[in-house]
Structure formats: structure tokens, C-alpha cells
Length: 267
Image (cartoon, rainbow, N blue to C red):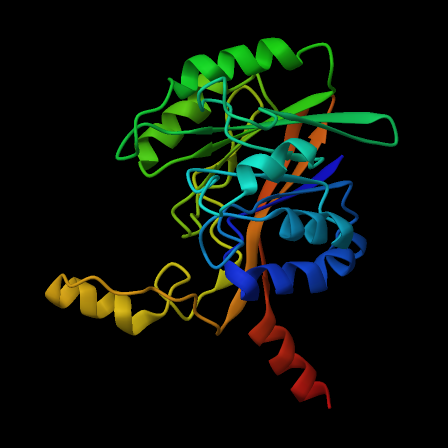
């Protein structure tokens, strides 16, 4: 089974590129499943039901969210009616929405859940304890489990990966929007990467326009950080799973600028 897990989709540039390319990427990479974190897909913060449905129609199988889950007005009432989208599992139990996904294709059942970290983040339930609960909930109902940890601290992500090694097929990190170079198979057979990076405009500061972010660092004054536009790339990881365990993981990038430059050279 081949899975592409896509990092944080940022704004219209990120989601348009994913929507445009996903069917091609599925075919070229013989993908069985595509899962995407899309918590920044609406103007860089949050998501809407319309965006969820468009991503699913384009060929994304499952959508995870993060700390910006409720940033768009009305999404808390939409999420219950949306299929194949889950909010972080360690939000308060009374929060609306699913705390995990089970996606099936050709008889293979993939379980997916996400947790938010606690280091440098607003207070949440312990992601390690919630991961134990989610694994207990999914074992016996799925053929493989993929866990996402959405947090700031690399140490927390690495520790989470080690904690779940051998108990899930893969642990992927999101939130920092910078792809890391540490994709690997952990000793007990779990694929791991600290951060998938973002799917959005890389001519930016984490997907936002450069100048207002830079000026705020210089003078501390509040500014509106608009979503940037240029050098859009889809970033993530390709993971191969066999008998519930990972057998390979590699970083994945699909850059609009490089594709357009190659097309110009061919013409």
C-alpha cells in the first residue's frame, strides 16, 4: 500500500495546486491513499466545508486539521456533516467532528488520527495518552494506522515517534511548514518524519507575504499577514506499508515553478 501524506495546505495557492495535480500524482506514483493536513487552507488559517469537499472531489482521501481548526466562522457547525475529515483527537471530547478516520480502498482499511502537541502550544490533553486511546480504538478495525503530531517542538515530535514505534505504521509531523530531512524507518518498523513541510507558496515566510512579517520582526507593530503567491510546492512524504508496518518512506515535493520551467525548455 502506497500513501502520500501532504503537509499543511496554505491558502488558495496551496489548495489550487493540490487540486490541480492530485490525480496526476496518484497515477504517476501508484498511490492507494492521499491524506492531507489542510488546517491552513482558507486564507492561511482554518478551513471551510466548501474547501473540504473540493479537496475530496479532486482526489484527496482524508483531511486532518490542527490548532487552527475553528478559525473559520461556521466550520464548527459544518464539520459534523463532512466525511473523511477529522479534528485533532486531543481536543475536549465535547468538540464537534470525528477524532479519527478509517479510509478503505480495495479492502485495505487505513486508520488515521492527529494530535496537537503541548510544547509552546495552547494547553491540550496529553498527546501521548490520547494516542494510546486512539490506537486501542483502531486496533482490530484497520489494517494499518498512521498518526500525525501537529506541534512546534521537534523534541516532542521525535519523542512521540519513538513512543509509537512498532505500534503504528507511520508517524508524521506537521505545523512548522518547513520540511525536515530526517525521514526514516524507526527500529521497530514505524516510518517517521519530523515535519512534512507545507503545501503552499515557498517564496514567503511560512506561506505569508515576506515584507509584513519582516517589518513586524523589526518594529513589533501588528500587521496583516497575507498569503503569498509565488513558488508553490506540494510537500509531504511517500510511505509504503506492508502487513501493517512501513517498509519505506521518502520526502516528496511537487513544485509548480520547476514543472513550468521544464515545460518551457521542452517547447
